[in-house]
Length: 271
Image (cartoon, rainbow, N blue to C red; front, top):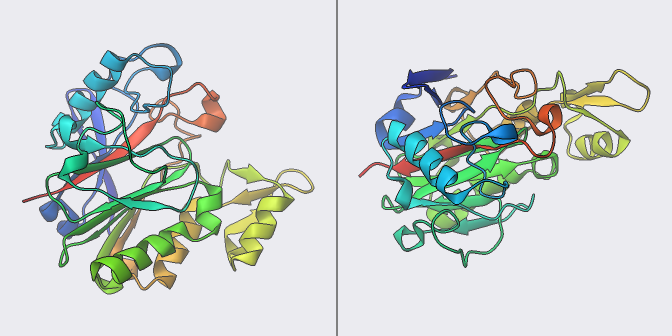
């Protein structure tokens, strides 16, 4: 299994993997919170377009981060995320939507493409970002998995979409599960535990600090669904970082409040 690593450049820290396939065939990176121009609770590299940030701040933040990973920020397309399990295919005709221009794309929590002319982006703070790429079919998919998306197997259905609609083979897909809230701090109630049990994910939920409370493992559950979908264990990279534990490095909805900023994973297929 590959390792999640960081590259630092000019005050901006970029999360990546040492997976050779991804590094040779993609421009990509998972953002952290430092090195931007946003202020207050959004300080400083806020990439959430749904946050109360100035447009010029967002454009500058995207320009800075994308510049570090070799992507023109004008090619980035962003979804309106609604904690769903819907995936939308995009092409170069969609460049700039929701970041620079108004978007006519359907609300969704996943983007997929085989077009090297467009960069995909999803944003998050505590929820789980998942990057999927098949280097043989040159198919790229990003999905945003909250706890609902996790237990309903959004990662699994994303692989199914790549296989059924884009001709991919699961054994050829490489995945990165990025930083999110860890099982050390994601404490939930009975209703979430019931969903974990229903999805045969009981090993990824444990007793919490109080009766009726439980700690849920989002990364482990998403990795489990990727394995069930047919990915090879050695092709899955999982970040060890917990966003709640590292608010100096990441935005965290639970630790910092609802007004905090958002990180993003942005990726583009190399020509």
